Length: 257
Image (tube, rainbow, N blue to C red; front, top):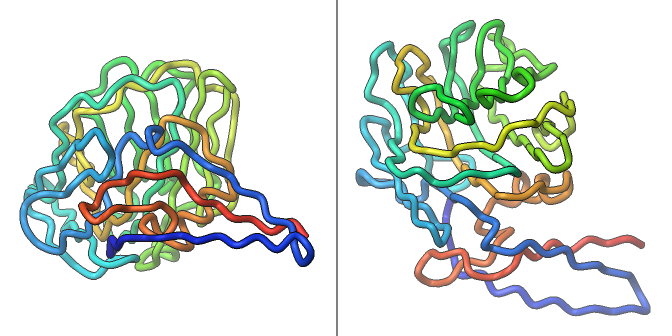
């Protein structure tokens, strides 16, 4: 997506409408891979943590917002983005991503996978029989979507979002901004990274298609916030300075009249 300096000026007119401001601390952003570089071998993380990714073989293409990466999805492919750092351990998380799948229907298709599969590792994927699966090793079993991502749903943009909290005991999907499956089986803290976008180091789970706008928070976002990310894109929803760094609070303006 195209990252631009965003200056937001809000004028309030109490006589005409009532507006409320919801804010989120930018420090809650764990990673923000927007794929806006359009070329080169690096995907920048615009969070303060700077967990930049190394692009292996995916190609740069037009994305949902600006540019994105396309993965060929062939067995044993080097099409993935490598995140080499251990990003951290989290009791809460919201993981958002845009994607199109163009093939590998009926197979494992990774959005994100920690290297290996140890306690607390996160795997976020579509798997047989074509369900979206949020898997944290050691929690109360995997969370499966009610939507099946089969041949009827391919070649379309999908927005995947999952909230997870051991404190609130909740795991919940929002698919294209709408609530899907949820349960109360979030029991294990997530060990996030090192890992890959679009593949798994164990092999055989390649994403075939496009990924864009991946942003991860260490808190539970509300549906309205997830919908704003989905509809407007990260750069328009969040303030970004001239260096391409997320610096100020989330500006979520809602009308309640």
